[in-house]
Amino acid sequence: MTELSLSLTRIVNARPEKVFDAWLTPAMLKRFMVPCEGGGVPVAESDARVGGHFKIVMFNGEKNIEHTGTYLEIDPHSRIAFTWQSVFSLDDSTVTLDFRPSGTDKTELTLTQVKFASESARDGHLKGWTLIVDQLAAMDEDVLLPG
Image (tube, rainbow, N blue to C red; front, side, top):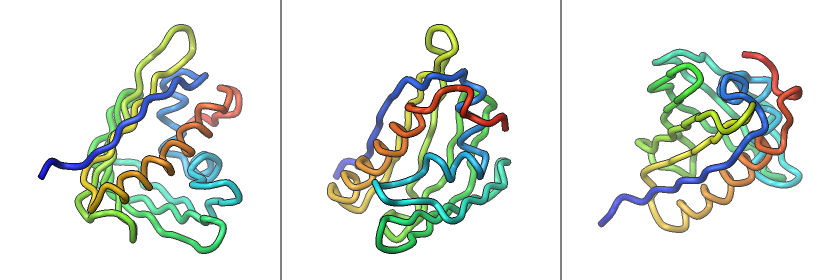
């Protein structure tokens, strides 16, 4: 069996340091980690250091779903990697975010997640991550807070 994974890339209208910092700042996580229309993020906590933990509680329109993880890699303005744990993911699933400058004041953001229990679990995560990354990509740089 091959390992199931997903990857998506978007251009964000902000410099890499702003996009990078948004993924580590609870106030920003609450703004774009919304998994569906009508959803929200009532809780976002981040101990942004290698070995530090995060907790993001997403409201999917019906119930709260807790997501937790541990930061595995934080390479300022170029890469963040972390474990991703929820009721819908395997304990050893990981997410990697790569940030690359793109043109003037833009960032190419690539999100990759590996290890899923099934193709439907992967497809569900792809749908959620696509909405999340699209929401971040729609933000202008002046909206993104400094880290």
